[in-house]
Image (cartoon, rainbow, N blue to C red; front, side, top):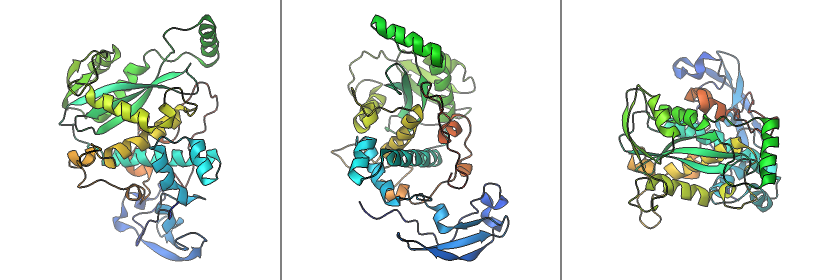
Length: 366
């Protein structure tokens, strides 16, 4: 199972209280040591502190990704298995814990990876051509399909993603059509403009105002409509029929490869699986984990040592390890989340078939 992830903190970097002025301005921050406490797990001795500005008490464990975890030894192991096509119950059986424990760990990893990717990704306008596509999957049941919109560069770097709810379409038996009407009457019909709105939001996040990029996509009708509304950005948009052979010469090859790897690495997206995600929020958390693994850990080639996509963009000198990614807790206030990113981080993305979705409202372990 391995040792739990330990953050060797010599000095607290800032006050963990988001209301304290020393949370973001650590230059004038002062703190005092307030003893320590002992615990059974490594490290056994945890240093305690108190902020002299706001009086908040905290410890060195406050800045660890395993903060408030009863099983910190499972965090790294769960990360590896979530990108190795294991389902929650499979992981839970291996470690002798409840499947809900693994789900909570997956959610925590997803929140951390959202912040990690937001901190690491290029903030300037991408200089490489981008490819846009919607990865088709479903939440709760096949009556609630959705697209996981991905923007991928020619370096295979995944710049961003978000979700778009869809209405079930295609051939249906009469009984299935009746059931769809019943479900839509009870829970509401998905927004027919969801794809256009979400693609607009995604491209606005990846391409800053004033930027100009080359963008490839399939012939989805919502994509040009979303691009038209981004008038402060320039897109050289080319479209390719989705029925074209998915070879390396296909302009959509980079995103098609990402779709294939996402389905190959994630148990909840396998064809005819019983490990599908019940909540759309869970899909997005696991997509964040996959994105960080794809961008900063996995080599671009299984046969040639080329390094991860982040190395091709000059963001890294070498691939990161999972302990490096999980070495230090990232606070959401540091990332200045807004819009869809804030909703996703705090678990506010709803699932229509689940009336009461629990948001992430932890006060100290955010």
